[in-house]
Length: 270
Image 1 (cartoon, one colour):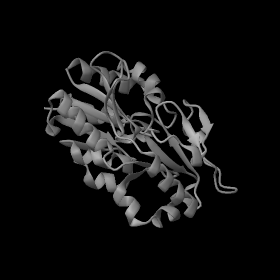
Image 2 (cartoon, rainbow, N blue to C red):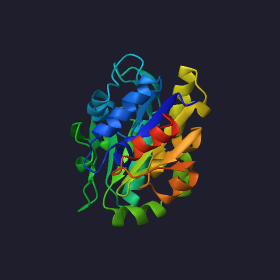
Image 3 (tube, rainbow, N blue to C red):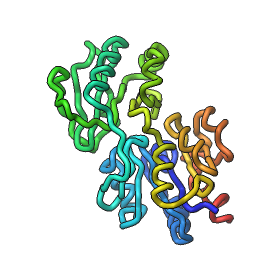
Image 4 (cartoon, one colour):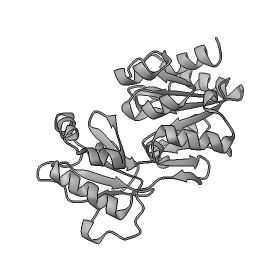
């Protein structure tokens, strides 16, 4: 029996206007009333998903969220950290060197700010169009604090530039970090032990649940790990092919109430 539903935001829970429809809200409310936990799982920070948590009433004691693509597991009401996987100063310097070699703009993010080191000429970061809930500050890579704690780094630039650049990233980096695309124009880089699947494993252990009691719904590459972890993995109708191939069920698209449809069919049995 499903006890926890993990749901991605963009392209999944949210329609193309970044809204949770009234129908989907009603179905999630019904699932919660039946005793099922709802956990939002996003690449955004907690403050970046706060308005959606509030819309769904998920800011009470006992509510949790997975943020930074699994880099953080937090209590939704207080922000208290259950699990955190960070990048160190040395790792940031290595990733910045990679960004310069591949001629890509890089940003890195902690719980409060987005840092902006110098970008390649005429190749500014597009991350400001994605992240609108945190301040952006300049970063001096030569004088980073030794104890800096960063939740993720990102390369954010047009798909036509990013995709071929990703193909040229040395295998050593792929072994040492979790690298996932959350949008065609956004590569997110995290601690090797951070992904949505590992975060759900940590959370379910904390809650005393088994993976077989978890349903996960997503659409993009960064959702693959949680689809694989969950006892019931659901791909959106608009999901990438790789995710559909891993899922047990393909629901409707995010413009067709796909989340509501999946929960009604697989959890509420309507």
